[in-house]
Every structure is written in structure tokens, then in C-alpha cells.
Image 1: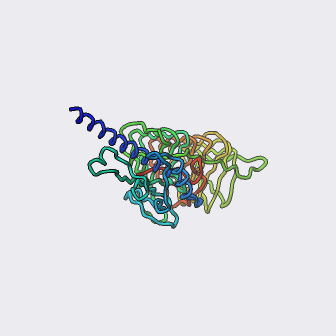
Image 2: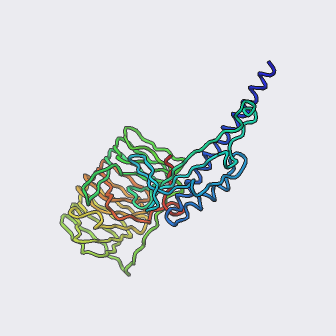
Image 3: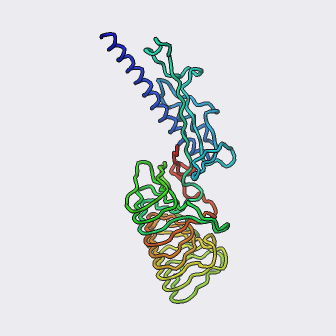
Length: 358
């Protein structure tokens, strides 16, 4: 009886060692993948992964990653497939290995009496730059969506897709809506709301940031107020204090950038209805209101990282929105994937917000 009890206790010790080593390895490999992903943009991915691993304790020793344990590649969110490639990588796969050939296998003192002196264990983790380059709809501090349909389209090819992603450092609330995209949230946050569908939740770190572009301010910026008429903006850059549109149409005839330091208020108006979102870039300077209410059509690339943006009862918004807080109500909102990539929205550590996907 005593011998049996001793055997059970010894087996428990071996099992505990295996569980602990596996947990340590999984945690260390995930951390190394996240660190490596933050270095994809500047060529330091391998070095950052190896540094994090060396500072981790796995199975009683530092974890050493060989260059062959670290693969750069691309991640296809739709097929959930990683493809190794050094050409424009957006993901990294790190594999940690506890192997006898590396003298890192998990030793089993009791099981060795029965011919099993050690056990080998490999594990992999994939991390991607989730929000870098082409963010869809960003609310740095919050996103609230009510009774909306959100999706994506490529205005160049006409192809539709499921890249209407919502990205926030805080909780994303979605009620009675269809989101053809993912909910990207800072690690530790959870979505809220009910009666909605989306393509899943993805955690990322570090926090997403977006700097304000102040432009070149004229001495006395004018205000623009358009009521019940069509107003054409000439191609180039315009700087306004306030913009007010009431039952109006604001059109552009070529690539146009609008800076605004005061309030933007649009009621029952269409904005750039005839051209692509890339033809109208709107950049805000201060933390005033940005309201699109009861619009028939809006095609724009809106950058408002220091203020809240409200889109209410918009029949068709197409483009991109980066805001401090984003509220979407009773609207059809479509992210245009043909918009040029940007490095303005990045994770706090640089190189894009990082998401562990596997």
C-alpha cells in the first residue's frame, strides 16, 4: 500500500513538472511573438523575440530561440492561415521547443524508472500587426454602435468584404447591429451589448494611438456655412474654423484636404457624394463636436483623434473614421479598403497594434 502511495505521489510530481513547463513555454512564446510583431516595421522582429525569450524562465532556464524558430510571414484573417514570407510581413510565428537535443526536455525522475526519462514539447504562437496600416473604424477611448450595418468595400475593384473592423483601447458596445468584421480591443477588455453579430473578438497590445495633424493654420481661419445648396471645394487644402451644412451638398472636384479647428455639424446633407473617399480627407484639430446627422451619402476619410464623432441616421457612409470616441447610430457604414495605408495609427510601442491570433 505504501509503495503504491509513493508511486502515485511520484507520478504527481512528474505531471506537475510537465504542466508547469508547458505553461511557462506557452506564456513565453506568446510574449516573444508579441514583441517580435512590434519589430516587423523596422526589421528588429527576430532580435526582439529572442530578447524576450532570453529573459523568460522555462523549465528552470532561460528560453533560447534559434533564428529557425522565428518565422516572418503574412496572416490571412479570413482563412486563418499563416504563410511564411519575408516580403512585406504582417505577422510572426514563434515556436518554442523543449527538446532533448537542446538539453531542455522536461525531465521525469519517476517515469525514468519505467524507461521514460524525459518528454519533449513544442508550441507555437502567431502575432499580427492588427490595426496598423489600414485601420477601419477607430474609437481610441470608446465605440458605441446601435442599429447599424458595418462592412467593407474596395472602391477600386467594387469587391465587398468583411473588413469593417472596429478598433478601440476600451470596451466596444454593439447593440442590434451587424458587423462584418472583427472587434479589436486592448488586452483585458471585453465587448458589451446584445442582439448583434460580428466576426469575433481580437485582443491587441500596446494601446493604439493617433496623433493630431495641425496643418498650417492661417492667421484668421474662415468658417463655412452652406444652407440648401451645392458647395464645391476646389482641389487642394482648406482650413476652416467651423463647418455647418444644412440640407446641403458639399462636393469636391479633385483630391481635397480640409482642416477644421472648431465644430463640424452636418444635418440632412450629403458630403462628397460623387467621388471616392480618398478624394476628401477631413482632419480635426481640437476637441470640438463632429456630427453627421441624417445624411444621404458621405464619402470621406475622417481623422478626429482628439474629438468624438457621431454618425446618426446616415444612409451610406463610405470611407474611414479615426476618432477619440465613435458613436454610430442607425446607419450603414462601409470601410473603403482602397484607401491608402497610413502609419498614423500605431500601437504605443510602434509598428502597429499587436494581436495574438494563435
